[in-house]
Length: 237
Image 1: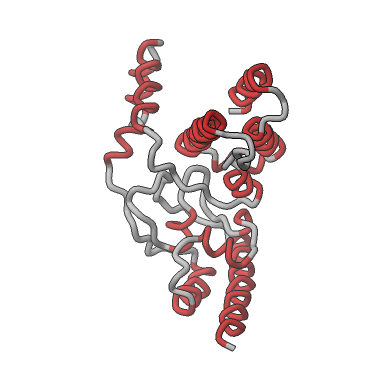
Image 2 (image 1 turned 180 degrees about the horizontal axis):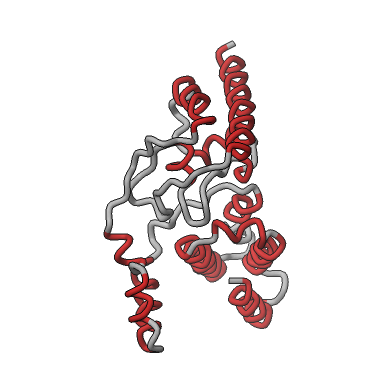
């Protein structure tokens, strides 16, 4: 990913110069991924990487189109990448793009693997991404980590509008990494909140969570619940 962004940055510097706002936003994205590589590596799935690259593509298209239409005296075009970079920096989940043709990209990757003679062995070893996508995923997880279950029930009862761990983190200010109990590529909403949609790009499966991790996460949940309760009281006062 960083290699692709570096090449794109060099191309932009030659084409439009180092004062371009889209270029500066891409540099910030590259730096964010580079500086937080170890922390982000567990959640950078194929779908998330495609989403990031697609957002860069969409931003370039809208930005340079506005540049072409710009007239003297009008506000200068702006990049829309800053929001995604902030989500990465704050460890919040990035929603899949509704316009990205994920299937086509993944199909091309599969075809390239077959051409290199690697496709057959991989397909025998494990289902392909396309096959996995066709298989319906469970949407309800009855095995929420035991030490967190009671607090999760309280959160859902008192604040039913919060339906994802990302929303909980955003509204309480708790870093998402302090709430994660799932392994790489698996869905934190499904694992901890117990529900998620069947179209989620992350895997819906559960695995044993060490008690020490459950206790740490539960303490964050309790703290977040108190924050939400305080906000609710202040709003109704």
